[in-house]
Length: 130
Image (cartoon, rainbow, N blue to C red; front, side, top):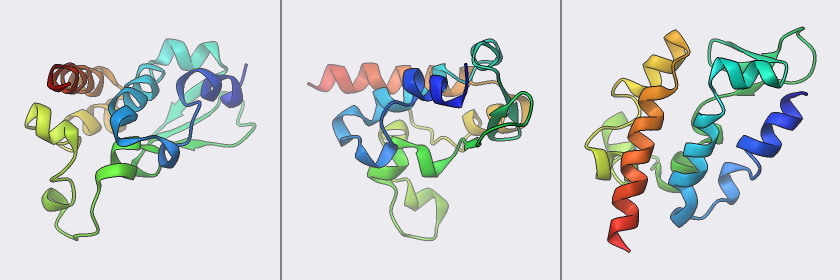
């Protein structure tokens, strides 16, 4: 198992290629794969916000805006952080942006649960709109 096997399941399509309609689901899938037990199954571990091979081999996968489908589709070029994310469905449907605790829970503690909870809430709200 490897980063390649992890990506095949949890990040099969690059964020920039995901449609707006599928951005929440794509993000949710990625975050569901960030539990320590799942990473370990693929011979991976978290190092800060990077996913790396347990033995240091291979490339890294940095969890952040570069591989977030929501950021790829909704982030603006405005320098004010809160306005940059104003159109993000996570903010729209939950009232919170990813920097309102969810991101910190992962980046500092390795806990993907708060982000998963927020993404599930946003996905449910999006599906009700259809």
